[in-house]
Length: 159
Ligand SMILES: [Zn+2]
Image (cartoon, rainbow, N blue to C red; front, side, top):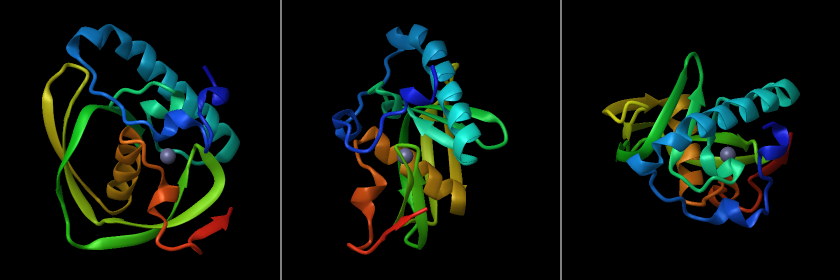
């Protein structure tokens, strides 16, 4: 488990829609979370960025997001239930294309329902940087990359 596990732009798996994780698959969670954690930490060592990762980025087509901002958090089968009308514009990046920046628009705030590792349902709201971060990861679950969210054909920049 390392940097090599993170798929790169162009890999067909990145464009596929992930399926929900069932309770029967719970036994796969510890291994998956460890893989996501290790991959992100390896990425950070090299690129000094990376705050969240989605399971499809390591080729596991399950609706699981791992976020590590101050503390580690796992979001199982998340659903964005509300979005703000207000949008924010930013240069987005992705572990699947580490040196490419893409200008995108995201909702300034969102509300998310998800299951935690104890299969308890939670609701959380995110604003600004965490809101755009979560929307980025959520897109991965639907096989959508930031490159597909580019505002126009000049919205690309090399880091
Ligand atoms: Zn990404």
